[in-house]
Image 1 (cartoon, one colour):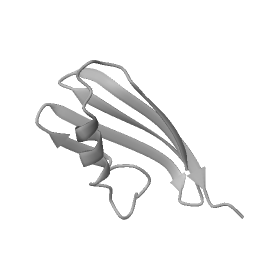
Image 2 (tube, one colour; image 1 turned 30 degrees about the horizontal axis):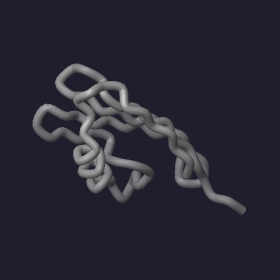
Image 3 (cartoon, helix red, strand yellow; image 1 turned 180 degrees about the vertical axis):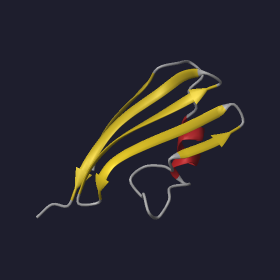
Length: 78
């Protein structure tokens, strides 16, 4: 998998991102879960494809402000 993320706001929390990634679902193990919330932070992740060929986008909001985004893609190498 390849991914590239960027911080968009001063309220970004690396600790929240790490916590969200620890909650990944076994059916969707790419980054984090589709939705995760803790306090004033919300994590959202959308994935297209399956484990053999996929692409996705994740974002973090603090209150209503988007403070982080990341694009990722990957698949099985032969």
